Image 1 (cartoon, rainbow, N blue to C red):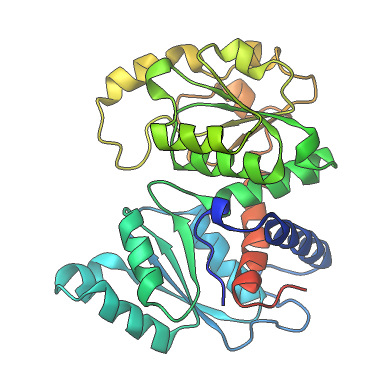
Image 2 (cartoon, rainbow, N blue to C red; image 1 turned 180 degrees about the vertical axis):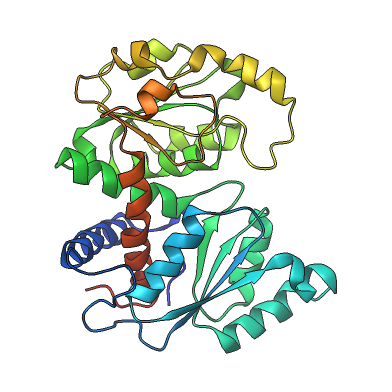
Length: 309
């Protein structure tokens, strides 16, 4: 049994195995419909329990299809309907019930502490579907997408992030260190990664560079990533924050400073951080990026169950 909580805590060889398996599984499904099961039904009889404390569209849909295509089933719980939130039941007791009824637990949470506490008491694998500090399933899928489109290892590419320092960027930083690719981060000075993340970068002798100039950050980029500037439950002066990011909007002019074949990726939902002409352009691969979540999360599930091919 293995958990999937943070990219930084998972061996590089295991992350690479997940990507290789996802590629094989995607290729094998070219003639299959969404609900048709993979050959061999590797997770037949397994139940994935999902719980969402934060809004979800892509994570919810992709994990539903992922476990279905592997031959298993899924049950989605609403956090506000459980004794955990309404009746004062402890995480320890909730975790023991989940372990008795299900075979894996995917948790999208507003608390990293809750995630770690569930891990402590569960006797089944736990997968981080998003937490305040990390979004590992998203970023591993993004690495898969980049390599699929560029047809080369991400270690040979220049990646740029334009936007806020959030959970998605934290996981992208961890991926940069694990997969050894150059990462430029472009953001206003007051929105750089926190001290813990900066120390993590420093300790790992990385290829990560911070810029407060968006043009410098995209120079020579093969890939430009972004995310919505105002994240879910962002407790800030939203008007003030949006004003700070006005100069970091991703438009056609900015894309011209990157390589001609540079692609644009966005984990969605989008906001005002990207111009429509970029978002809807041929360089934008956001729909392929979103769909690939299914394939990579299937391999993440198999990794957690110890069944990677």
